Image 1 (cartoon, rainbow, N blue to C red):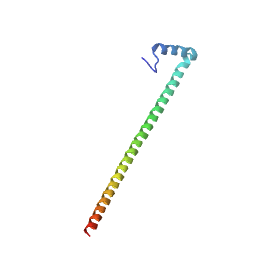
Image 2: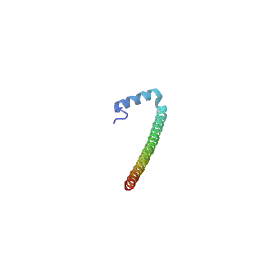
Image 3: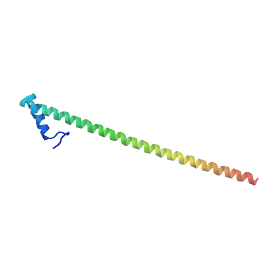
Image 4: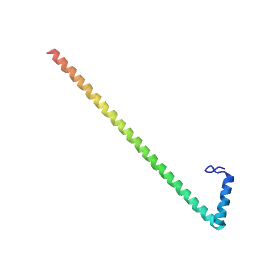
Amino acid sequence: MNVFGIGLPEMALIFVVALLIFGPKKLPEVGRSLGKAIRGFQEASKEFQNEFQKEAVQLQEAVKTTAQLDTKQTTELETKQIEAAKLEQDTARSAQKS
């Protein structure tokens, strides 16, 4: 059993020291308070993780949207360039025929 890098002998020593400091009547109350504090920390940590993941997903969606817009704009630009080249060729042909 290894909790937070603390083995069974270390946990027993901590328990004995806590028992000597707080006494047998106060020890359950201290344990409850410590448990609540740890639970609160875990909940805050999970909430932070969830918010971080939501932001990461939103960022990924924004990058995808930007990439799609860039692709669309590039395609439109290429289409305009092709049309302009065709128009120049048609103009050149018309000029040669005249």
